[in-house]
Image (cartoon, rainbow, N blue to C red; front, side, top):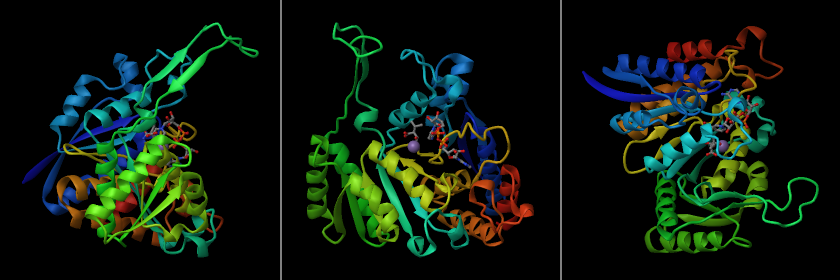
Amino acid sequence: EKTYRICCLPGDGIGPEIIAEGKKVLAAVGERAGVEFAFEDHLIGGAAIDACADPLPAETLDAARASDAVLLASVGGPKWDSTDPAAPRPEQGLLRIRKELGLYTNLRPVKIYDALAGASTLRPEVIRGVDMVLVRELTGGIYFGSHERFYDEGGAGVGGAAGQRAVDVMEYREYEVERIARQAFEAARKRRGKVTSVDKRNVLETSRMWREVVHRVHDEQYPDVELEDLLVDNTAMQLINRPADFDVVVTENMFGDILSDEAAQITGSLGMLASASLGDGVSLFEPSAGSAPDIAGQGIANPLAQILSAAMLLTYALDMGEQAAWIEDAVARVLDEGWRTRDIADEGTPADHILGTAEMGDRVVAAL
Ligand code: NAD
Ligand code: IPM
Ligand code: MN
C-alpha cells in the first residue's frame, strides 16, 4: 500500500476546526482508494509564535519540504495584532512558507453550485454559469518588497507623531510575470480558452511591464488563447456585473488577494473558496479565507473550502484526479440534499439542516 506524507498546518482561529474535516475526508478517500495518508501536524502562525516566537519554525519548513504535500488551514488573529512593527506576525509565517517553497502560482477556482444559487448576494440570473479560476501571482509584488517605517525625520506631522513615513515597495521581474502568464494560458487551454489579464497600467510601471510581458508570451506561445486586458478597478466591478464571462483571470499578488475574496462571495461564502499554491517542488493547499476570529471556537465554520483544497491536493500533488472528483461530487451531493453551514444557509433552510463544522465533514464522508 502506498503511503503519502501530508504535512498539516492547522494554524489559528478556525484553522484547527476546519483542517480536521479536510483530514477526515482524505482519510476516507484513502481507505477507498487503497492508499494511506500519513498526517503530521506542525506549527505555523500565531500558534508557532506562542510556542517558539517564530511564525515559521525551521522544523515546520523542514517537515513541509520532506512531505508529499502540505495542507494548511489559516493563520492570524487579534491576539497577535501588535502595534510594534518589530513583533513577529502570524501572516509572516504564511508568506515565508510560500516564498521558501517557491509557490508562485495560486489557483483559486470560483464555481457556482446549483444548490447554492440562493446563498449568493447576487441575483440567480447574474451568477448562472459562473465557472472561473483566479490565477494569482503569489511570491512577488508588494507583499515581498521592503516594508519600512521611518520615525522622527523632522517633518511636521498633523496631530500625532511628527513626520513619520511608511514605505512598501512593489517590484516585479520579467521572469516572474512570464511564468505566471504561462500558467494562466496553460489553464485556459484546459478550460474555455480565455484569459483576462488584470493590471493598473494607467498608473503603475509594474503593470505596464506586466501587460507587455503577458502579451509577448501570448503572441509567441499561446496565440490560440483569447486574451483580454482589464484594469483592476474595472475588474472589481465586472466581477459582479458579468461574472459568468470570466474563464481564467490572471493578476499580480495583491490584486489577486483582493479580487479573490470578492469572487468568492459570488458563490455565497468565502468559506467555499479553495486554493492550490504551486511551484516547482512541494505544493501547498489552503482555503482562501482566513482564521475567522469572529466565529472561531464555536464549531460552526464552513469546512468545505478546506475539503475542496484537499481535493485539489489530490489532483495537483498526487495525480489522483479521479479521487478528487469523488470529493467534489460528494460536496455537490451534500449541498443538493440541502445541508448547509450557517454562512451558506438562507431563509429557506430548515433549522435542522444547518450543520456544524464536524457534522458537515461527516456528511461529505457519507456522500463519498
Ligand atoms: P477572514 O477570511 O478570516 O474572515 C472574513 C469573514 O468571512 C468573517 O466574517 C468570517 O467569519 C467569514 N469566514 C471566513 N472563513 C469562513 C468559513 N470557513 N466559514 C464561515 N465563515 C467564514 O478575514 P479577516 O477576518 O479579515 O481576517 C482574520 C485573520 O485571518 C487575519 O489575521 C488575517 O490576516 C488572517 N487571514 C489568513 C489567511 C490565511 O491563513 N490563508 C487568509 C486571510 C486572512
Ligand atoms: C490569503 C490571505 C493572505 C494573503 C494573508 C493572510 C497574508 O489573505 O491567502 O488570501 O494576503 O495572501
Ligand atoms: Mn486574502
